Image 1 (cartoon, rainbow, N blue to C red):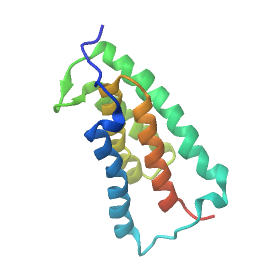
Image 2 (cartoon, rainbow, N blue to C red):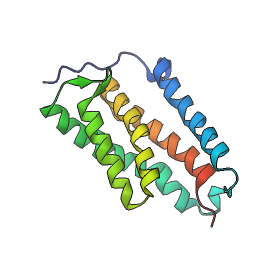
Image 3 (cartoon, rainbow, N blue to C red):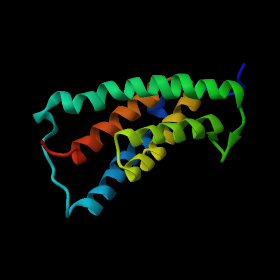
Length: 152
C-alpha cells in the first residue's frame, strides 16, 4: 500500500491546478515571441484529424500508459519523494516520456516535453487519478498545436 495521499476536493478549486493551466499560455507566449520571425501560423482545423488526434486521443493514451501504468509501477517499488512534491516515479516516468518523444520530435522539443510531463505526473500523484493529467495534457497539446503545428 502506498503512503501517498490524494489531494482533497475539486481540482477546479485548486490554485496549483489553475497555475498549471496558466503555465500553458505563458509558455506559448514565450515560444511565440522567440519563434515569431520563423513562425507560420495556420488554421489547425483545416486538417481536423491531423489536429484532433494529438489533441484528444494521444493525451488520453499517453496518460494511461505513462501515468496510469508506468508511474504507478515505479511507485510500487520506489515510494520516496525528491525535490519536495516531485516523486522519483514522476521523474523517471518523465525522463522516459521525453526520451520516447525523440522518435517524433527534434532533440530540443523532445527534451522540453520533460517539463509538462513533470506537471502531469505531479497531478497524477496529487489526485491519484488520471483526470487532471488528461485535462492538462489535452489543453497543453491543443494550444501548442494550434499555434505551432506546421501548416499544410
